[in-house]
Length: 325
Length: 257
Image 1 (spheres, rainbow over the protein chains, first blue to last red):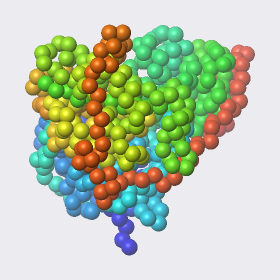
Image 2 (image 1 turned 90 degrees about the vertical axis):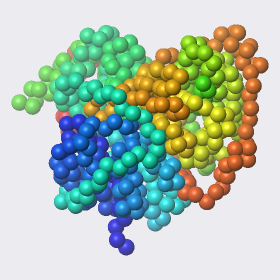
Image 3 (image 1 turned 30 degrees about the vertical axis):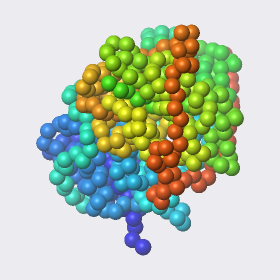
Image 4 (image 1 turned 180 degrees about the horizontal axis):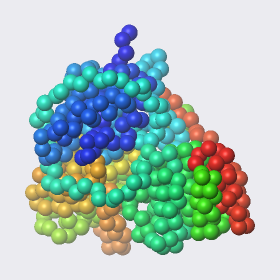
């Protein structure tokens, strides 16, 4: 039997680069069959983005280039994925579990009357076909789901799949931008993120440093930033720290907010309520520094330090820097 | 204008939540059942608009077991004119596709100009349902809005996009979903609670909605469920002036930095 096609929606940033989740999406797709990328890019950005997708494992790319910035929400990407679906008869469709990805998956599932697997953390194949793996209730439970029949549409949690596909020289098929088939909202403006942050994206970072209420103030939260920068880590925050105004909501790790599964998670001044644990307890190694010896975060920490983060962290940074030289 | 708010009852995420290891379904006895926090914000968005505009009618809609009725009453106490409860044994373990079909059928039956939902529930966390309902209804969606303005003809708001913030506008009828960035819900006062008791609460079966749960269409099924082994505490030290060094050694030894 020839390998089945697995469609992968690969978002393209305004800069023309693929989003960070692309490698994991293509890695997951390669575990199931032949990864076929679907890209919607700005004018003149498409070929480079398609080559980038190839380097990450796309054997084939369906490419749509827009002359202008998109003016309708979801529709350009949805129609591109739908056209690629028609052309490839895929066994599965993978999209990132982010806002745009979810909208595409939702509409495609209804339109094609397909089963959908939401927030998968892994995929594999059994004798019957495609299986999605899920981590439920803040990863207290693991479940597997599959479609009764037909293709499976999967939203994949960012950073959850480590497998990477082998680079390929992709066959690029150009699609014309299609008219929306469903009523759609219009985009009336776009404000590019101005943060000059060179930090890796929280969702896909190998190391995440998060700060909590225990850091005491917005200035104190700077300690988490310093450590993140010293380690080349992504920056996160507890809900309490976000509510207190120490950090923006986009950094919130937990039941509400971002779920992360890095190799190393360092929690500074975070008590570790169930809600926070739900977003980080699948990290491979957890380190916690907290003044309160009874803080629940210590129950799940591989290395816990009862102490003042403002004393421990500078020493940590200094020691690591000294070793690196 | 008629606004339908999608209401969800969930196991309390501040307590322990369990799946039944035989059926894979939520263990309803294991947890306190509460109104999903994000639903509160969706209701608040509808109620605060109704206070500022004329002739706004709010219907609260939930699909769920018998117990969801008390959750619907609680949301009625925040405001809203009527509650609608889809309850049917055939919906036990319903997947997203069936749930979206059922909710869309109920929304149609109630009548709507605008549907407001939370962006993602705290239990399922899929975040797909609002756009699935929009596709079922054949209307525009504007999901995961961090801000929301409602007018008689349209909704506008902002949401996160790739590399920036997107401003969107949808002509009504439309489906929107809101994030935690929206204002906190109000606490229902005594007056609201008393009034809620007199407000109409209708129940619907699948037959009432003309939905066949056993139709031969692709469904998502659960193949297995298992409990993740609980994480255990590792080494725990008290800082005696050298904890930073010891942590550095631990991380270097583990090759994670």
